[in-house]
Each structure stands twice: as C-alpha cells, then as structure tokens.
Length: 297
Image (cartoon, rainbow, N blue to C red):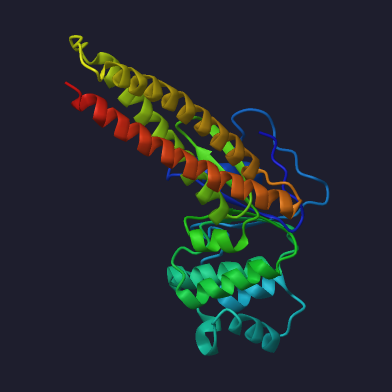
C-alpha cells in the first residue's frame, strides 16, 4: 500500500519476530538494498536511527567524548548537565562505552539521538534493556520530538502512547496492513474481526453437519408441519447471520479509517454495537433451534 506519514506523526510497526521489521528500517537507511523498487529520501529529510544493538556508539569513547563529538560547542559543565538528564552523574561521564550495561547504552544512544538534527527518527526496539525510569525518559523525549517517528517495538504501552498509525507486518500473507489510529483502536478492530470470522466458521460448520445428518423416516404426526417451520427458520437464520457478519465487516472497515466528523464516528460505534447484539441473538436462536431439531424423533 501507499504509505503516508506526515510531520509530527508516529507509525508503530508491529509483527512477529523475523517478519523483517529491522530489515525494513535498514533498507530505509540505505544499509541494505531494497528487494524491489527504490528508496527515495526528500532533500530536507534527516534521518536519526536508534538501533537495537546501538552500533553507532564508539566503544573506545567515554560518554563525554560521545557528546562532545555531536555538540562541540557545549562546555564541560553543560555536557555534564545534559548527561544528568539521562541519569549519568558524577564519574559516570568518564566511563567508556564498552563498560556500559545494555540499559546504559540505551540511555546514551537516546542522549546522542536527541542532539542530532534529525526530523525523522527510526527506532528499533528502543525500550530493550531500559528500566522503568529510563523508559519514562524515552517516552518524554519522543513525545516532545517535533518530527516524524517510525517505531518498531514490542512495547505495546509505548506504541499506544505515541503512535498515530499502526503498520502491521504479516509475513504469512506477505502484506503490510496500515491502520489509522492508536494501538488500542487497532487491537479492538482486529479482535472484532477475529470474533466475526470465528462465528462465521461456527455457523458454516454447523450447517455442514446438519446437511450430513441422515434423513429421518417421515412420521405421520401432528408435529410435521411445526418441524418444517423450524427447519425453514433455521435456513433463514443462517442467511441472516451471514448478512449481519457482512454488515459488521463493512462497519469495521469504516472504523479503521474513521471520518473527521466525531458525530459520524459515534453513530458508527453505535451501529457496530447493535449489529454485534443482533448477531448474538440470532446465534442463540440458531443454536436452540438446532438442538430442538436434533432431539426430534
């Protein structure tokens, strides 16, 4: 699909391990060639990259040296104050990068990233190895960032706090699904779709089982007409259930790309809830009728 991410927006990239999310970021950076097509960056686009392994940090440098290289105009005291924002105080500033823990490397990489002139940040699992306080610093820095963010993360809390779009990588289908909205909104829509598919599969399975049942000998009783009416109602219910599920899918698609009018979105939400309730009622009636017919001698 065409991907559009405007200034100030954040896309949360999600998908299973091995789906190619890191490869996608490295392709945008030019570190890997695209499998097809080409990557064209705008003239005024400046990329900043936060890698999982923090490869951009120089192992032989001290923290002070890393910051001095990025901000040569800062004085020693200003560098100390700046590093303190990222929980590096006292003699910590003279530690070499190679001596840092995973969490400390993450905080230093974030400190370096903030000093670049990047207007597009590519973040690959930025909360890995970070403690809770460091994660709060990260979220605060990203929330104040005025540019655009492409965020690969398994941290659903961070994605939900920042993302304005969700890009779902599905390696099984070989597709990239784009959802406009927060992670919570995306999750609710996907859950509703999954439930609708399960219900549809249950109806189809039950209908197939009903067709495979051997015909019962015709008994001349006063209940024959009533049984016929029940069977017809069962057929009608199956058709109604399929139609309601189709309507639910249509409303779900509209909610994936909601209009700007809040009143319309509210009505869509009401319609969705009403359809779900109607579907539940019809499924209940269908189940009861199926049991009654199965018990009919």
